Length: 307
Image 1 (cartoon, rainbow, N blue to C red):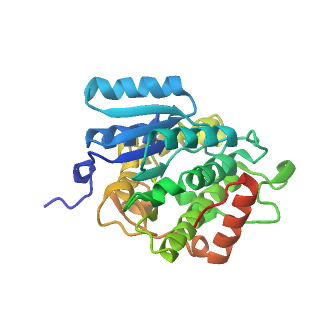
Image 2 (cartoon, rainbow, N blue to C red; image 1 turned 60 degrees about the vertical axis):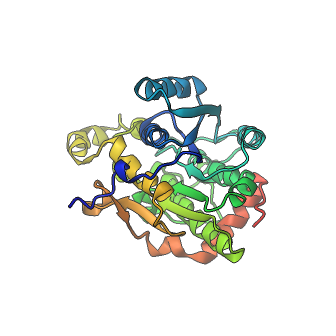
């Protein structure tokens, strides 16, 4: 008997409303496709809506019954996040799953439109603001979920609240900034779950990571000489975007998922394989850091959570 969790295990999702950020490519595209196949109404939140529409057309070519709406969302712009949230609230009365999937990885130093270091700004602060702005809809939907996509790189992440955003490039490195944003995803997840529990909400917060998957996330560093050198070996170690999407899909849809859990590939080093329950590192469970990050994130984004 095959006990591996696959897309075949996703239950019927007819009547469910699910938001996927970064739904036009890579893991996001595969996620939107599988959720739509199971009958969900999927909002594909994309910075580039033309690419989003092309991705939608590709899915519809195989599944004409797919219910997908493409809506503009730029996680590097708080105004765009607010506009997206207002659009959702005007069109929908519930959100069953908010899947915070979009991200950037190991980019050169840059700033969002609001002046945040771009990796923390996109991967954590943008999703934090989005979640807060949609929280009422999420809380009012029975058994809803917020799913945050982290990374094994969180194990290298260090929180430094005296220089959280690498001001003026101070101490900046691509991997340090990426790893910090990914541990922030987990700290946010665990603190949100704690707050859901404190109000006896049926909503839950869950995290997942895709392992090493074949996506365009690495486009910013593939020309570095040592990366080129390692690429042939790297390609033998990666899994498809469809496999990389499975941990997030399981976290979003498996009826047995419990709030505060973390899912990732079950193979060696959690690099590849079918999704299983995994453990994040002890530092990601530092609840003092989680509380501090929450407060700082509210201050930076101006989004206060009603929870």
